[in-house]
Length: 193
Length: 270
Ligand SMILES: C[S@@+](CC[C@H](N)C(=O)[O-])C[C@H]1O[C@@H](n2cnc3c(N)ncnc32)[C@H](O)[C@@H]1O
Image (cartoon, rainbow over all chains, first blue to last red; front, side, top):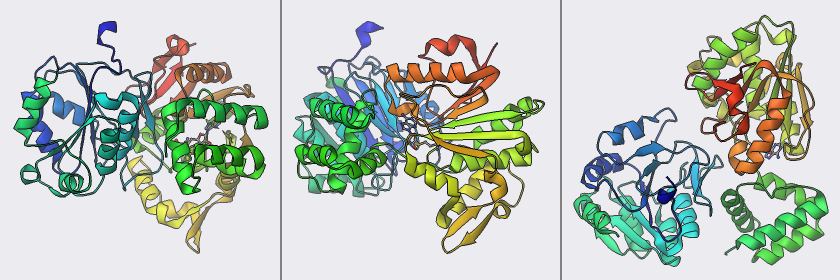
């Protein structure tokens, strides 16, 4: 599998979402081509620590290998990784995941800001940060960090979001490169080389 | 504020040289986050100021260690895990004349009191000893007292019930001014002591070792060292329990262990 190992020149796409974003992802995933040339990390706010079924749920919508992250798992391109409930998800310079059970950030664990910031730190300008539907302000600071590192920022079009507050908050308070519907997002991600 | 990787390296070598604390094999991503968080909490304008404070003020060191390590814990965290302890692990050890349990990285002790409650309900507490260790003396002081904030008790009692507890959870403590104190009967069998997993040796042989949400802060090399330490410290057919996202799979000791169904509990197979 060595040829799948990520290097900082490969892209890392991080999608963060909260209320309403599971539906959005259920729409997005079937439209992604199977051999995406990047690693995709999904961080969602969720209630309980027992629903590792989220990966199973998404797996019904895509043939891209998808799984919930365990401590020290390696990032490989062409894979989708889901942040586990109740841990912050970080990325080490060695392209492996690290989990952190510390205090909630923005009342959330996992926090979108934490993973966005860590991705920006490790992948720099190769980071693509996407913020989906949600009803709180998590994610905006993280997208700012991605922008600062030279990466790319995308927000779900608030009119297409079940909960428009979160993407709208980012659009108002930071620099967003693209504002996309889920169809546009799929087309864009499929076009990444 | 920004911190570079090599600045962290410099700070870590200061800590080791001056105070003997070795954080060099901790997860860099997590350390960096914690250091940045501390700089913002304590309003250090630059990395150099933080470094100077640590070098010149030994009392600040204690705060640094407390804030850099993560102490978040709760009672009956992951109720399913405790259910497996209750229904499988502890009953299988029940015929032993004597039970030794080690909580490595016990933080403020919530996990240890949860275990004492399980043992009590299985009528095993009288013949058990619970060794609870951590590198941080401040959390151990709290653990020793068995006093926890009252607002957390709602969650703890829900967790207790979800883990299969059938007694009145409130019978285990008394509430007093926003705090609760757990019954002495539970803490009688606990021994608290500092122990640094990086540098201290094995100190006994155990039937069950719990080290949950500690290894996630270590890199793979340090995880390997610590897992070997646990392996040395575990009696035959003993159990090792890790946190819900931690694993033995990268370790050389994995071959000697069998995992219990889906839980993060492994049994030594010889
Ligand atoms: C997140 S808490 C885990 C508490 C509890 N085991 C649980 O799962 O709820 C991590 C604990 O590990 C301790 N720790 C970190 N490094 C350690 C080391 N080298 N040796 C011993 N304990 C350590 C910290 O002080 C902290 O109290």
